[in-house]
Image 1 (cartoon, helix red, strand yellow):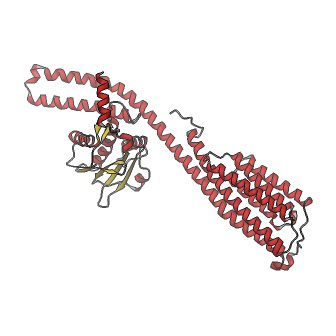
Image 2 (cartoon, one colour):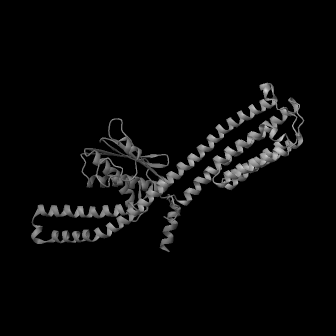
Length: 452
């Protein structure tokens, strides 16, 4: 694989992408939280000044709110760029919020202001967003701001009389601050935690994908070695069988000639299987690519599989509709063969193959009348060595099929039939396998160019 892998086995590109996606979501949460702070500060200033008739530096406090709104607009523009957000950016954004809160508290009573406990909200948000030294830096800065405000602030004509209960404006302020902290922590910390959980889930999926791709690479090396090892004896057997077939003493025995012919077919099939495994373990667009049409590819595939495998009843239905050109190679055929072979193993008496067009994809469905998939197999579907056959090395056919489909941008899904048996569906984007149509004018120009 060309992409770098970190120490956890996750491709570095996937790690950066997951972190950047989570960073953007968390930045968006900060922007929403800051808009609430802007509206809340304006509302609090108006109530304190005009309803409670407290003497506040209203003009200065509104200027601070305006600066916070401008900073939030800049943050919104930054978020819309879609570029990844690093921890240092979130840290600086939280520092701006702490600075604005500190200035507002300085202008309205310092630590005597009941809203001083909003520092706890900044610490809680920082603990969820940041890592390592950034968290403790936020704790240290907020503690320092609290210490400075305890000695330096503009006075607030608000009596600290908690004994009056809810009749005291100070107690009401404490209650509002508590409720505000509780609601914002529950809502936004829950959202941030969900973003981080989704990031971890994407990283786990990327880790599993890296492990599976590494497994495919190892299988490719093994298949390559097996192909080289088996190539010579298979070729030798093919030559010997050809000599036997032309041997005059053996040519007179019709039964022996049929057996030799059957052996030649089976040797050729062994060569095809080895080549198919080698291609399936490597790139999806392998060698032996050929131009054909979708319907011709499907018809040939069904005919070839039925000719080389025994199954009592084989049903083939092609509902693709209007035909179109495509590129076919041994890998695509081997992928469908793997699924058909699994269906025949589970249901030797009945296998069905159907094809149809769904929007912009080719949907190939393989059905059988066997025992179906267990819940454990369905949960681990497509992973290597997950098989209900109970033999070593089982489950690789579906794993290789899923790898090829995924490389082409498609998917492989499985389910159990209500009437018994299983269904495996292969979805392949037509854009990944189709050839663009060439109009008559272009074809004529190409022909004239070839003649010249």
